[in-house]
Image (cartoon, rainbow, N blue to C red; front, side):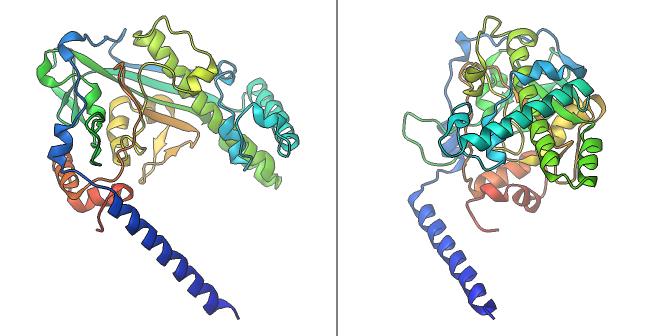
Length: 355
């Protein structure tokens, strides 16, 4: 009886969304790709020697200790999974949410003990380090440290929003020594999972119609995967790459990213093209080395997995590309040697124009 009214309300809501989006667009100014490149991050490479990793190639971790990862868990997103908004540990004492948060936390601790004591999940990882130099907005990875043969190319995007004179238009390639600098630089790659074996236990809970414990297990597996990424990055900085061997940070510092270097992931803010996971997978083969596969839409399986790149530069920082213009999309599709329609489809969330 209210169908017509309901449909009209949806149309009205989306019309308001279109208007608001249009208004936002008019307040933002974008530079051309060349202007953005002219305003790239400037660094004196002549006064800097990039650190060399302790090994080149890949290293596999077949059955990493889950117990070691528990202290690296960031619990705040765990509570958000259950729509309990608040920062851990303060949420445990929240006036209205505290009782429920404490109960949930106790259940999580009990299940974590089962996971570790009974071996419900297996943690596996693969990391790798490769000789690299930037070439414009791309990063070339070489077959060996002689750098005579390009093994593969990582393609990156640059911010195009007009910035103040003090703020550059960032691109991840800015954090790797340029090809013509004469400096030997390196880049890391990683993929970690704590989801090996989860399917059996999720199926058991679902057969018992126990949605609560099914969701709890998935949420804990996700938290452990993020903790694994955090722990492995710490070992990279202090041990495997060793550029911050004297680092001494607690878990709060790690959550706040108070360390040198970054680990951006393909498909996210700084490198929003999910198809770059193909390059990552061909490089370190997480399917073979860690049991992590990717779907046609580049989702990782098991879902409790994290993958990405390691950058060591002291000024490396996380950022979002924001919306990009057609001139950059055309340039990017040529660099990737793919049809622009394919590029536009994968980059649709960051396009500042209608396709």
